[in-house]
Length: 311
Image (cartoon, rainbow, N blue to C red):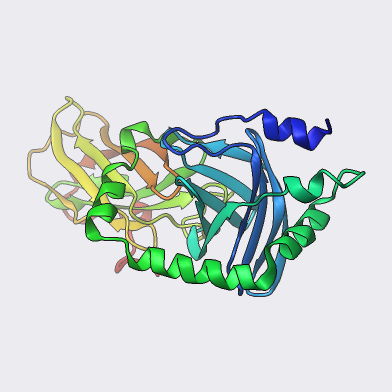
């Protein structure tokens, strides 16, 4: 018994809910194509999208709801959602995880031709043999069946799929991704306003933590407080960053006779949910400032706020 027959008999359960075993899968899209060999730790294969050919030899990452992720390259991610008879593959482009296309792959019966092959087949050879075995007529038939299947999906089915999605409380924490870059007033005269602004960035895309760098993260949930030297909370903050990863405060007025005997604190925490990958990243930061009794002018030499929001 060769290695491929042993692999076929040693079924390894990869997902809960939908049974997907160590096996071979391919899509039936005439324009785009995906061929995958999947086991419990690795995926190999080939993909053609818009005429561009990509080889796949990557590790697998699995989630509690049965989905899995394949990092093809630094610019390309595949997210798989198995069902009873096929796997939905979402092709995402980094860094913003934009959807490029969706492919449906189904199990391929490679046993009939693999058992007569004397040597171990390469990924390309299996790709070509799978095309020969499938045939153009079968591809056209599968496309028609898939179109009819998608047309028959009702609203109740879609709602059920949403209800079965993993709760954010079960998402996996990924470190060293989100970072908050905060600029705030340092000296704030009484009877003026304390201001700050911030940017949320992806540390992997903005390695030098530059306010005007790149890798901005939108929809980052920002929470926090402005606290005086005695521990009294003067303002709570609960906002989200815009499409440029930016947020600018509305300013907090400092009234007359405000205590000037110690440090004030701007205490912030950010959290970013990557819903397509069921991951999240967190970052917290504390900035100090002082209230002064100079009511004539505000120390603009240490004021970093820019308005309106930068592009």
